[in-house]
Amino acid sequence: MRVSANQDTCVTSSLCVYRVPQVFDQDEDGLVLDVNAEPPQELREDLLHAQRSCPTRSIRIEEPAVGAGADGADSGSGQAATG
Image (tube, rainbow, N blue to C red; front, side):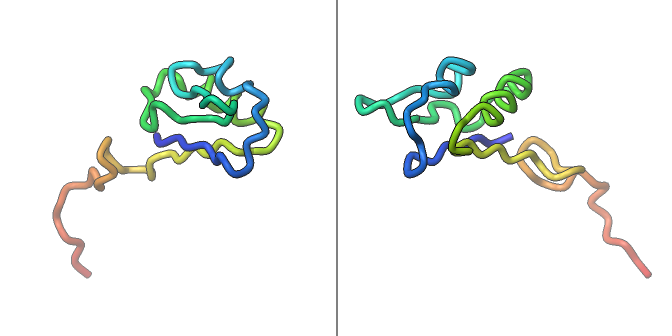
C-alpha cells in the first residue's frame, strides 16, 4: 500500500495528522506532509478513515494489485502460459 497527500489541495484541516500521525505530519504552514509513504498494513483502516474524512479528498491510497507481492511483482508461478 502506498499513501500520498496533495499539498496543492490541502486546506490544513489536520484531520489526517490527528487520525494517523504515524503517516502524516504538517509543515510550518500547516500543509500536509506524508512522512511514511509505505505504511504497515495494520494502519489501513485508520488511513481509509482519514481519506474519507479529508474535506478536500487530498489523500490518495494505492492498494497493490491482486496477486502482486510486497514489491508489486506478480506472485504467480513464473511459468509462461501456453495456448
